[in-house]
Amino acid sequence: IDHSKITKDMFNVRATGTTVYSSQLEKEFFGPNSQSGLQHCGLYDEERKVESVEEKNGNIILHLVTDEETKGKNTLDFTANFTTLKGCSSLLNIKYTIALNEGLPLKDGSELSNIQFLQNEKIINEEIDKFSAGESNGLKYQFYTPNNANDGNKHPLIVWFHGGGESGFRGLHYNNLSQLKANRGAVALASDEAQNIFNGAYVLAPQTPHEWSENIDDATKLINNIIKNNNIDSNRIYSYGCSAGGYMALDMVVHNPNLFAAIVSTCPAIDQQNIKTYGEGRIITDEEIKSINIPTWVIQAKDDTTVKYEESALRVYTLLKDKGAILTTYETGGHSSWIHTAKNEPENNGEHLWQWTAQQSLNNEI
Image 1 (tube, rainbow, N blue to C red):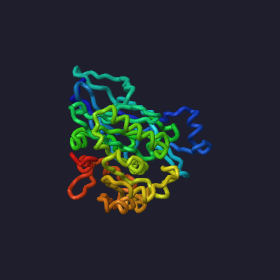
Image 2: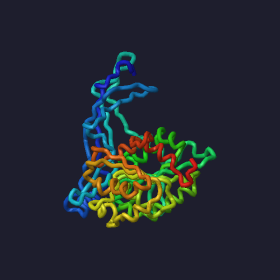
Image 3: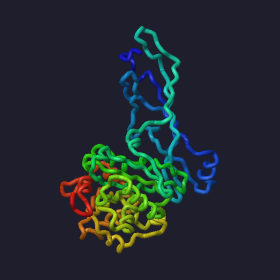
């Protein structure tokens, strides 16, 4: 192939995302006559624009245009019942079809046409492939092991509790991938930047089959099992979470006051309108929040309409500020303030979130 004559206009790319569920499950869970009334929000069949073409190691690489307006770029299908406001992320069957608009030029002046392109069985995601899947007491999880895990030192463990949208929805969406793919919480903590700050940290991302409040004991057993079987510094276990996971990050400390060294809770769903959705009716009381005696950092946007700021992050801060709790407030951003957490943007007195976390220890000897 004469790579010097390859242009982006030679290729036509189409992306198709279809449901992973059988017709029986579709009938049972989806549509107005189903038991759950779920609707698909992320299925697609779209043409993708090629932004540029690159030749590397004999391969032709197509870089696709990907921005906020791009349709057909998502790898998850958000399924929801918009009456009950309960929604969860589901996997998609994704297929890319590449066709030639004109023949590929060869160095001898001729062309290759009528070429069939075959997609690999797996769409590779290098960030997610850093993690290994596991299951403990029926609780599925993804686990990242730092590159320097066997350097003779103990390393911290960061536990990421996902939001309600990444739950298993009574097993229908229990795929053990949504907690990595739906937002960058756990994935960001396994990035080179985060790992350098923590000098190598384990990252644990469990997935609840339905509601976190049902898995307090399971999560505790999982964490203790992970500690037992890895080179983990038991004085440096950090509880991170967003939305329903922000609820869980706090509740885990309430139930395990001596397990964690710090909490980072982003837009925690502890307000009244979310309790029945994400807590099965269990309210974290003021007394329980006041009982928290470890460093705590809460993060939320004021214009969050999914979780009420005054009843969530501000409430936690007000109850714990005398113990040194930190509050980072964003004026705008809605219910997506975990983006700031995943970018290590929250800052207090010149110190960013991850750097602050890395300094926390139960024995105060970092």
